[in-house]
Length: 353
Image (tube, rainbow, N blue to C red; front, top):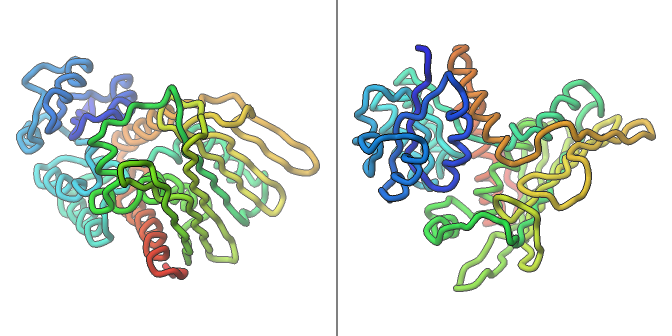
């Protein structure tokens, strides 16, 4: 096979970022799209050079095409499970947006379906592919700050005159716990942060979360402010602090949000100073060690590059016969991490994993 032929189930605004690497890699081809909003599917399909016969409203009709190797499932969270099972039944490989499902039972069934079909299951997580995070990981792996002791992640949400326009329908399902699986900041976007904790520190042994509520009008609430504390094996610790500030103006081309990461080791401290946007006028990666500060700015910092790198790794893995990042099993572990925070907040106590 000389090309990986990919179709999208769901053509919301996030699909623009998913399409970037496929449109730019001669080993891949975007061959069909589907959305229940057919006009939205037409808009993006035509932009990507697809004919009318390659644009669908019903993904089951699209799955009947023989020349699709893999589907990207870009749907609201509560629809991931069934669409994934249908895609495997149709003989397709699957890349499903994070979080992979709403429960571990669903995640297990998805992994089992992939195994039974002999197909790839990739859980699409982009933050671990963000270039500053990749540089930080390389520095950690090379021993620059010694053995990791703690990870601290701060996430600020606010407003921005340059942010993405979020359609009302997309806002609605993210604010509905039955469709999102939790709240938009701690569960949905929080998946990125739980993935970062898992990526640097491994699987947590215990989680303790306090999740508040911030009213945003019309009887709607964000799941913030929130603090999630993690205990990792070997007396190592971590935390996520998520805050929504209604008058905080941010510099961003995507969501009105920005993130920072602090990694402390036995020999030094490492910072990633930005994520979705740019709050701090600092280099994206800073290292303190031995009474000296070093910084790196020789990398792309747009959030879109995390998507390009994640998709490219999947294409590379496909042709090398290797596992993508994240595998279905990996995605299940991150989901377990995220669900534990929801349970801890409900119970008002720490939850062991």
